[in-house]
Image (cartoon, rainbow, N blue to C red; front, side, top):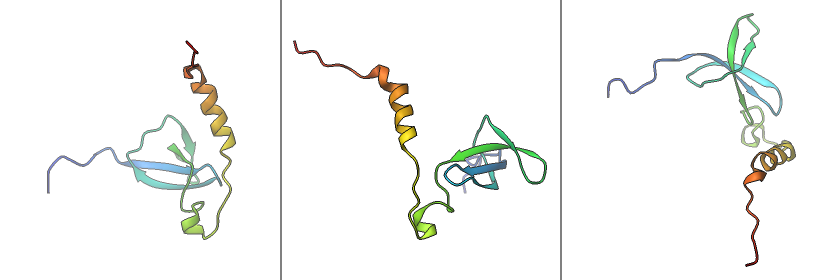
Length: 89
């Protein structure tokens, strides 16, 4: 095996599924600016996810509605200023 190719900054991180508020604690190198107080009373970095095994249709066996209208509006609002208008020259 090659030496020094794996990250060394593994730590406990809380992953939270935003579609159903399911959260779990796991080791990860994922970075986050947010923190959350976990069930054990300790504070951990929080990584927000859109889909987890609790909300994905493959694992649940049923489709769940995820509100994307708000995300589309946020995208258009954020990047709408870069929309080019075509001139008829």
